[in-house]
Length: 367
Image 1 (tube, rainbow, N blue to C red):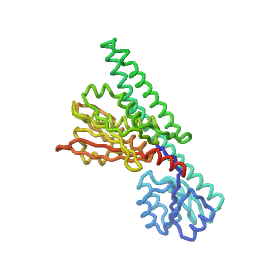
Image 2: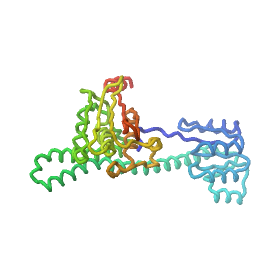
Image 3: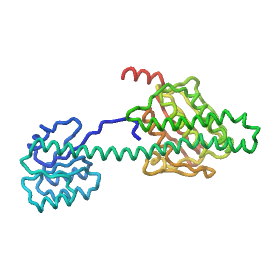
Image 4: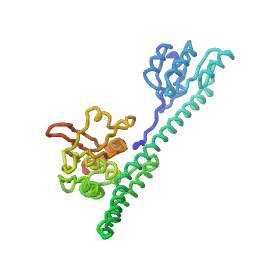
């Protein structure tokens, strides 16, 4: 889920002489391409082991050896085009059977050479876009399932209470409406994320205390069930520039939900917000079980899916903090952890920093 669209630069490895490369780049000038020159087969293998290229133009002395080496390095490497002085049918067959994408014989036809390179780079870009699309769809499903958990969980709890005591319905009806609206907002946010490349998410002024109250209101039953008491330390009147739905449901809800999850029954949970220089600092402090150092280093690694049970066996997806970090990056914010598993200061303090609204306004005007 890329929240900031970017122009993709194609990296080309040219295994040839400096003179021939100068000829190629002369008629292949394209600002979306960067060139790396390898003037020997050994140098080419060195670069291939070091980084991934979108296209390899090979005019070296041992094409078959390079092709085999490229294939061994994995599918991440881009296609290989051989540029040879002469070729026979046997060599041609071996090249394509071995996985070569294309082959040309010198002297090169400039128009044909340019066309073939453009075709290979276009195929490479399409493959990259398809792979990114698949990753984005998976992440959007993760956002949807994770962020709907709190509002729908609240609805289920309220309905259970009303089923046992129907006379409580008037009291809980506003909470039910708020939870349903929060769920609908999450669905709308996911729709926006899905179309982000064409219609970017919009940042807007967000009231800190109002947003925190909204999030806490959706967690009242969770707090009541675990007998966790909230302690507010909120500086009044603070505002930040953020995307309101994701700030409430993907960022603050995640922090507070985790604070409840890892708190001991009956313990306090501090939720604070204050101005620190140009930043608004949110912090959530629990007196729970703490976070192991190894786990802290892996919290934002999507490939790890780090998760653990809460103090009363509460489960989670392991993706909440990863999503939180993506949105913080989009806002231009940052996150800090302090945690201890033992001693008088046992527990975790999570701080997130967002630019104060006035500072963000100045930055936007300059941009």
